[in-house]
Amino acid sequence: MALCDGSTGKGSAMARISLRQILDHAAERGYGVPAFSINNMEQGLAILEAANECDAPVIIQASRGARSYAGDIMLAKMVEALELMFPHIPICLHQDHGNNEATCATAIQHGFTSVMMDGSLEADARTPASYDYNVDITRRVTDMAHWVGASVEGELGVLGSLETGEGEKEDGHGFDGRLDRDMLLTDPDQAVDFVARTRVDALAIAMGTSHGAYKFSRRPDGDVLAMDVVEAINDKLPGIHLVMHGSSSVPQELQDIFNEFGGEMPQTYGVPVEEIVRGIRHGVRKVNIDTDCRLAIAGQLRKVAMEEKAQFDPRKFLKPATDAMRALCRDRFEQFGTAGNAGRIKVISLADMAKRYADGALDPQIAAARAAE
Image 1 (spheres, rainbow, N blue to C red):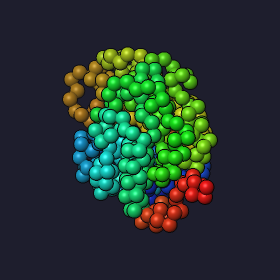
Image 2 (cartoon, rainbow, N blue to C red; image 1 turned 120 degrees about the horizontal axis):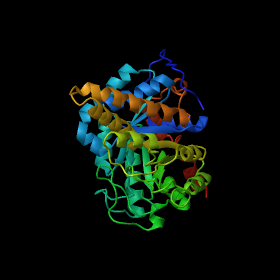
Image 3 (tube, rainbow, N blue to C red; image 1 turned 30 degrees about the vertical axis):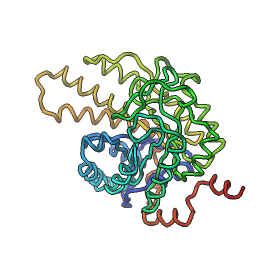
């Protein structure tokens, strides 16, 4: 595990990078990359300041809700500013949970270098989709994105709790009602077929994690967090980059701060960091984290409000909130082995990535194996 030592490697300027290149590098060196969600300037600064402290490549992702909240132009310009401030840090800007082709295409128009086409749900982002629908729409988005060198993450299986059969909506994205257990777990054999037919660069899998803070009612074990599914898929698809969604750990210390200063969060449990590290050993390369960042920020906002009741300067609230999120991001860069790798990456332009896709150099290994059968 690389440690954060403050080294910045400021000698070389870095362009915006594709998700595929970051994850390929992570696979070669055996680390994972946290993907932090962004809605505003403070979150962006927290992520990049943490990455700068420990020389870590960065995945910043924005949901449809974030794009609606901040606006595409504001998000694009914020990321441009972060690139200018931290030119030595490779930054991938990723669309999280795209619901249709238009969402993904407009993201690329606004500078996103990677998109997720979540075809596990239909375009309403609530109705579980058929397998054929998922394959068809994901393949169309993959073709479109690869033409311009952008990366694509697909999803197979539906994110939701194995305890309750329910899913937590994230910015309006999530199924209604309850689903059977088999719909909440990705089938390893189907994963092989899905990757072969869609040519995705990364595969988000369903294995018991869910969005939001209330993931588990107890410390998760194999009944509710199916890490064996991760290992089974990795056995069948050893060259494919796996993605864990809903992977905030919801640290107890952040819950305690939130509640100490007026919050009313019931006891909850997230995905233990050691289980994420286990996943990284078995092909997980991208780890989505949002709730932990929100909780770190919200706890400090509450703290200032309670301790300084006359305070009305937003900066006095936002500075400690940014510091708390930065500390969280830095810890995840260290824990996942991301630290120390930014300076090792020589960014490949999207134009060059497009050429590599066109000549088949980046096709999934399983696709070539299937063609030879």
